[in-house]
Length: 154
Image (cartoon, rainbow, N blue to C red; front, top):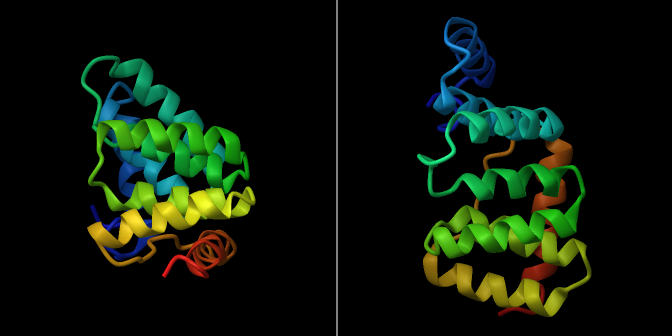
């Protein structure tokens, strides 16, 4: 997917919107649209698109679907809802590093620094940190949480 791998996000948005126009019953298209909306700083739109995905695909869900919901709540600064979804996501996909990154940032912004640092320690076992968020304000929210979490995790 172009938007996921750093290509022109506007092209990706245009393609996914066209896909949804042609086939509004495509659960996977709604999933990818939600993810792109998170990347571009529209978390509430992402949650709406994700609800369509969940409605259209009640049984055949991508294993990381709760991570996207958690990310959207995180960027809407609904940290309690974000943490609940991210923890549930780890139960389904315990080796998916993005979930650890967002959860560590979430815990840090909640003031739960010991838990954030523990998540960072678990993350370091899996992979180094990185980001895919295009919106500068949201990227900084995410990275500042990781910096807080990592400040004494080492």
